[in-house]
Length: 562
Ligand code: UDP
Image (cartoon, rainbow, N blue to C red; front, top):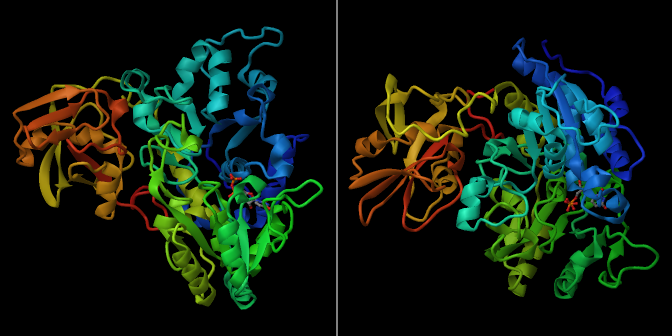
C-alpha cells in the first residue's frame, strides 16, 4: 500500500487514549503544534513529489509509561519531572501519523499483549509467529517486556524493532559477549541489535540513528515581532526542579546585578529555599506559556543540569541566547553519577553539546563558570548582542518527517548480514572508485554485503590520527562517520592500497578495528560486523574511517539519501 500524507491530526488524538497526565501532556503538545505539522506535511509532500512510499503497520509501545515499568513519569508531569521523553514521543507519534502510516499505540502490558495477539488468559504464553507489524517503536523498558512476553517471535521480529534511546548506545556496550569480556558495564546494553536500531534525541554518535524531536518554528513576521519585543535585561533560568538550583547562589547573585531573573520551578505551597527571593518564580508553566516567556527573555541560562534537554533549543528558537557551563574535564559514564550504567562512553563537553557544537555563537555561549569574571563578562556581552530566533532544519516538523521517512523507507535490518561473522576471504566483484584519504582508488567491491542505503556515492574514507575516533576524524573533514560503510573498507587490500605496511593483518573482535598500530606495523581487521563503531579511540591505533557527506541542517541524511 502507498502511504499518503495526512491532513488532520484529530484521529491521532483518539488513538492515544487518556487518563494519565503523561498522555494529556502529549496530546496537548500535538494539538498545539498541529498547524505546524500540517504545513510541514504539505511541504515535504511537494519535495518528495510522487515518490512511492510504502505504508507500514507500526506498533508504538511506550514502555516507560507502563505500570509494569513503574511509570515513574506520569505522576511527575505536573511536578517538573523529566518531560523531554514525552516531548519526543509526542513528536514521534505526530510524525509517523502525518507520514500516513497505520499506527497502534500501547502504554500498558495488557494492550501490548492484545495487539501482539497473546490470547486472553494465557498470560505469558510465548508467541512463535512473526509479528503482524512491519515496524515497532519502543524503548528499553518496552523491549524488555516484549522479550518476556513474545518468546520465539521476539527473536524473529528483532530486526523490526526501533529503540528510542535518549542518550545513545555504543556498539561496545551493545555486543553482549564483547561488553562482558571487556568491562563495558551497563544497566541497559547487551541487546546485540544493529546499533542503528537505537534512535537518539540528539545526533550523539553516528553509530545510532538520530531521531530527534521538534521545536516551535517562527515565521518571518513572528520573528520580527519577537526581536522587537525582547527585554534586554530579562533572564530565564533552565531548571524546573528546585534541586537544579542548589549551590548556584554565587551565579544568581552576579546575574542579579545585571538582569531580572525568572524561573519556572515547580513548588507546592511555598517558594523552594533553593530559589532566592529576588527571582520571579512562575512555577512550572504549561508549554505554551513557557514559550511566551522565552519570546520576551533575552537570556536562557543553564547551571549544568539537566543535560541535553529540549528547552535550550526552544529558547534559541524563540530568540534567546543560551549561556551554559563548559565541563572540563567532560562528564561521562566513567566520572559522573548521572551517566553511570548508561551504555555509552560519550564525553559530554557542556550542559548541551549539540547546541554548543551545531549552533554555537552568537546563539550559544559556553563558558567556564569557575571563572566568575568570564561568567559576568558573558552576561554583559549577551545583553548587548542582537540575535534572530534560530532553529536548525533537523528540529523542524519537516526536518523530522523527512528524516524519519528516509529511515522507514530505506533502513532494513532484517536482510543485512550485520550479526554474521565477517568473511575473511575477499571475493572480487564489480569495481567502483572510492575517495580514500583524498585520493581516488579503484575499489573491488565485496560480493556479500554491498550497502544500498546510504548510497556508496556519498562515501569517503579517511585514516584517523592515533588516539582519534572515527566520529572525530570524519567531522574534521566536514563529513560524518557512516558505520554502514565499514564493511567496504574492512579489507587487507585497503591497507595495501594506502601503502600502509602490515607485518600482520588479523581479523579480531575489537570495536576499534579496522585499524593499524604504527610502531610495530600491525594491522587489524574487524571480525564481527556488530562491533563496527564510529565511537571509540585508543592512542595505540590509527583507525580506518568510513565517512559520508550530509545536508547542512540535516546531518542524518547524505546528499543523495532522500
Ligand atoms: N517545560 C514546560 N514548562 C516549564 C519548563 C519546561 O512545559 O515550566 C517543558 C519544555 O518546554 C520542554 C520540556 O519541558 O519541552 C522538557 O524540558 P527540559 O529541557 O527541562 O528537559 P527534561 O530534563 O525535562 O527532559
